[in-house]
Picture 1 (cartoon, helix red, strand yellow):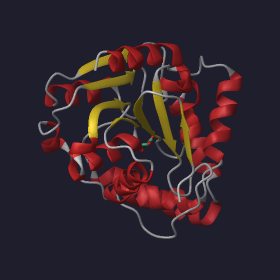
Picture 2 (cartoon, helix red, strand yellow):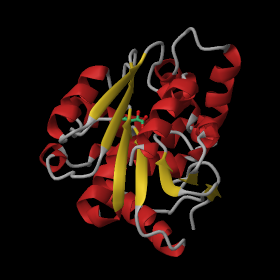
Picture 3 (spheres, protein in one colour):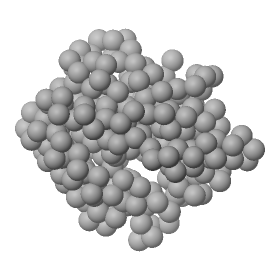
Picture 4 (cartoon, rainbow, N blue to C red):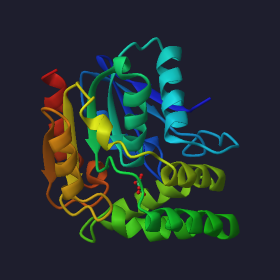
Length: 249
Ligand code: MLT
């Protein structure tokens, strides 16, 4: 069973977090009004226990679809951050009829390069030996710009540190084996908003622009002064873009 925050009333908006994070990374998005925020912790992250096995993006996607079934939600807006975006592509593959609209935050449609995949497997070995902390410290400088306040770095570190080794290992395996979703882009027929931190070093603005050329009608919002975690570092700008997008549906 996934731990889920389910708050507010209105159109369901399912927020899917990235790696190595948890649903609380969307805590500032709870300020967006007139929507029902559904924020699951993926297995082994935040307050959800690990599943105990290997994962794939489609397996994560199925967990999210099951969650909608359990809560009586037929269609939702899906907002996926980074690995959460990879999971959104899984939902678009498996159950496009459940998608009312799509928000892609600091993510990309392509699969890992061979070099990136090798890095994932090296990270798995590192986590087995040393736990999640080295991963957390390596990721933190990419998540926020150096200009972000100290308390923000501390809070993001705290959220990342709630990840379990099993959860992180499963996510690394799922990211390493995820399919390329380039061909899927033209199958996405729902309104799509793409948001990216202008200084994102993991999934830079060029990734957002490329996805936008593949998804009909997709719009890109570039957030100045934000790195990978644009929704956390520049929450007001991201919330304004999301609220306007949802209002227009
Ligand atoms: C994430 O933020 O979910 C990850 O950095 C994505 C990735 O490593 O590909």
